[in-house]
Length: 179
Image 1 (cartoon, rainbow, N blue to C red):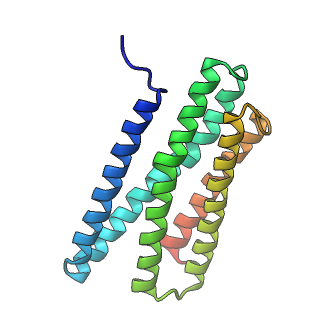
Image 2 (image 1 turned 90 degrees about the vertical axis):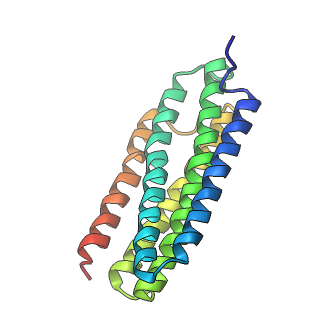
């Protein structure tokens, strides 16, 4: 008989793998930092984009999980499975990816642009909004885990558009630099 993926032991294994990946990510970043400045910039930018993709994947997927969670009767095994999935997504993928995105993004903004440029300030404001959305999802996840199903499926469908719109704004600001 196979082990259930919702068992604490499986969660601990997943957390250890995520921590190992994060440590490798940090060590790679430090190695890259010690490389030539032009090469290190490109590698750090690549790592920044990888972290953003991971974070965005979670921001787009978690509201969908909430919608499916609504179909599970409170306290059921299915509801418990969704709670485990939501908690792991937030704690093992989204928050570490968000932290790496912020650290590398702030470093790149400082080292390349000196925190100057209207587009950069607008981008940072949009990233602050993404961070707020991330933390709101974390609060909602804890509510679902307690059996309190916050809001409605239609709310989560609409909420799912917030990270999408912010991502579009951020990409346009970074690529076009309109001001």
